[in-house]
Length: 165
Image 1 (cartoon, rainbow, N blue to C red):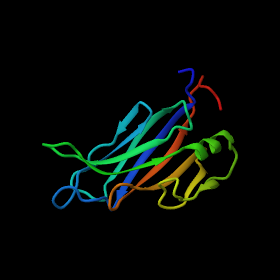
Image 2: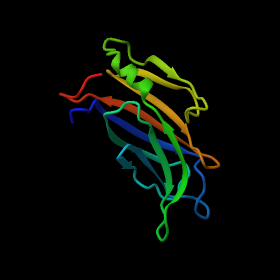
Image 3: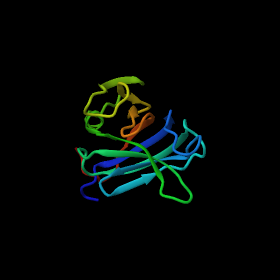
């Protein structure tokens, strides 16, 4: 607990144009991993454009560690099929949180993260000040699969007594 910086709430919004892994559809779910932490969304049956709207929370002690996202197709009688993966870093998001931006107008863009070969962003990702907190919206293009994207939203949660930046 003494090394904990805070909590990262990841709102897994939806998947877009996910790959087919069963006969005509898939039963997708998302797994998010960071270090030894592993979190999972609910399974959405027979849907290539699922809307999970699940909130997953990671405890952050190393802001430089990558966060891995994996999409799987739930199978009943065999191992779940891989439907792609992505990786992202929260460095720019943490830098925005460190700024302590109280008093900014709502929906002010603090910074932008551009898609590149070093990240899995499908489009420009804005880090904004919204409703008294720093929020990052991102669309991640899945790797190791023929198609698919996952939309996420990040929020920071301060913990009383946690180590400050």
